[in-house]
Image (cartoon, rainbow, N blue to C red):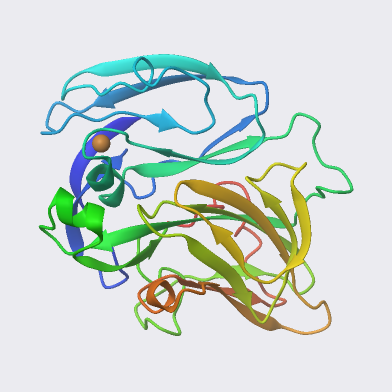
Length: 284
Ligand SMILES: [Cu+2]
């Protein structure tokens, strides 16, 4: 991956803000490997950047002073790790001030699929979506203010406020989609720097929830799940099969929901067959 300090669109109206990114997008690229795989990773801190940056994969066991060290603009850092634990993990920049580097967009998701594959307690889903929730601070907010929550402006879902919510934002052009009765799997990661997310599917119930996305950590029939900063969960929702319905996947903390953390899931017969599959699991 290449670290790029660039202006990035942060809402559906096209507003740009100076952010720090992996590969120019927030979140960075989705990484998906299988348990047991060896990940060979190289970070390039682009020479045009001003800051030092780093990479911290939560799916790795490593040395924080070695693999995760900060590198200066123009430098590269290569390391390998074995993905030993299945689940959904955040990756993020750990350079000082970590609060600012994460809040400016330096995070993403690595999914480690379980070596044993699907089972009764971890069935195959019809569609899978990745949702990453992050912070948006007012332009020019200092690292110290970010750390303390001052200048907080809203919540980003996959890099934009109300990214998939045309109800609350007429500029939103996308929703999540499925057909009635399908099993929809959400891989949810909380990249907010200080606050947990209270993730709830309005007009639905989480059919099954796997803490950290690990098939061994299964819970059934939950309404709202707390997701601490820098943690991930995998959650399935199954809509009624006999009629079209809609869900709003929200962070039930109203401060987060009403400032951007609402995503609409439409369950209807003519759902786009490509959505939630292949390269459309993290909708840009
Ligand atoms: Cu950084």
